[in-house]
Image (cartoon, rainbow, N blue to C red; front, side):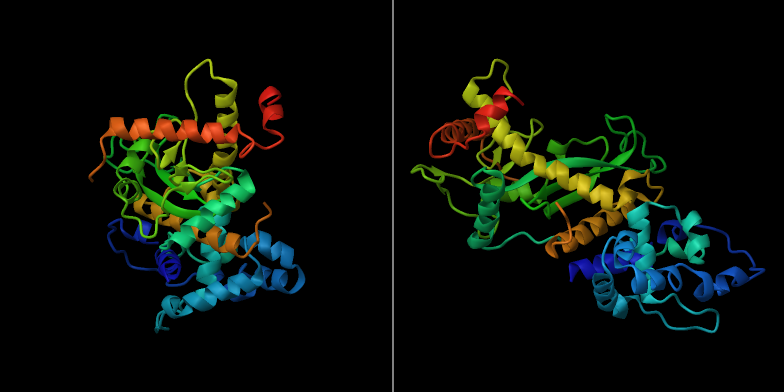
Length: 376
């Protein structure tokens, strides 16, 4: 339901970004331009997409980033919300055309001014156009079981990282959106599962913030610290071991080490066991970086500098994530009260050392880990 509402908002409101700007109304010399009237005869939706659907499913999938059946399903779900009444002034855009315009914009990153000519839809009309966490212990444990099965790292619920999505600087925003990489952006902070799906995301951050700052002020972190997340599994032993260990997320050096957040050893002169631990953790955590790559490669609007209003940029990112999850689910992808920080960090170090020992023991080692450390 949340997916339908979000995509409907984007389809119906992909002009509000320009419509929000106050303009003086001017008399229209032409209500509908003749070349726009011939949309059905020559526009991409009624011509090319019909040809691709009938003749080349693979090309249709590449064009829309999904096969015809999934496109039809999404249009069917959104039609009640996207349907507009016909007036004496003009024929409304069909729900299918709205969805197609939205998906193509997300997939290509093409600007509205460029799309208007091939789709034969005015650019100011084009521009108008949640993930769910588990709630049971069995649901959380299933995520952890998949991490261990696919990436050989136990008790992992998800991997967390941040991605900057470039956008134009909002008026009078100063350096609020300017990031350390040298451009303006909003931040997508995501937690992904072992199969590259997003199980949680936050797009509220502005470019000047850090991943850790956004995470530290999130409901997810508060829920982990306070034990409020529904169904979060109780500690139990690592595979083939006897000592109870909490379940956790995997992060990089930007995050604080806690029992619910494992990160690599950062000191120099690491022991061999610590190097092996770092390799095993980084191998698993790399999934979140790959998920960002898959997301941006499919929806290449995320690779551009978006000129939308920042709230629409956040909306676009959410829509891309939800579409990404739908396609991953359908197997269409090839590949704030907090405990005292000193105590929490100490417990995290103790837990990391325990997992390190397990990774280097007969119970948790894998045959190739020594070779990978010797010859990375």
